Length: 243
Image (cartoon, rainbow, N blue to C red; front, side, top):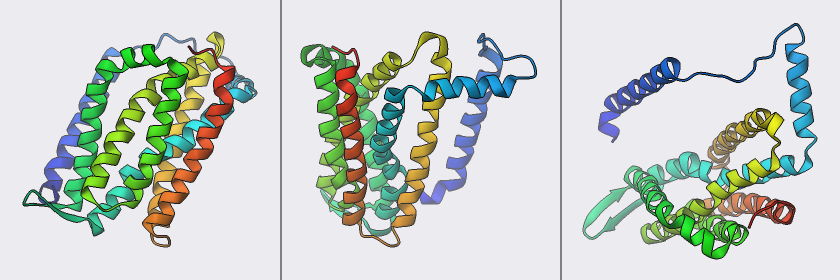
């Protein structure tokens, strides 16, 4: 991978241009636009009204804290593996860069495969129990993903976290739909979109903290933050209409 950076970034750039063309050419926006001199004032009033929804704010905080774990894989974990990971598995040497790619590949494959049976499992367990089960699998697994340098530990932890992710993501969207109102749904979605910017900032923070703290301490820190998010979800679940 390190020998083909130019080709890799060229393909990524071309794919981004293709996506941009498709969006500009074929997507249309039929949402009513704000007109008049008070556009900014109207927009701020809409955002203010949404932020008065205390349950929605708690949901956003919970989502930010829990999803910050995945941001560590993209940022800190990848950097750590590239610098310090090296293993020999079945006679083949695996570098840190290869391990980082393997983690993402394993996650993608498990998510795709589990998506096929997730509706059945959710129906059997119920939405609330499935969501809690996903959190219980997802959060502790990241302690090992963030802090471990052992090949088999990383593969096992990614497997568990990926299954948990399959439960968390779609049911989290269901919670968001329940918390938002029809007339301001676009505003709710827009504010919720800032969560991904927040997780990106926390991912960058993980790289900065790596120069000061050990992987063990960082694993404790990030899992501790995600556990606070878990507590927020526990507070919200009885107040949301899920099965």
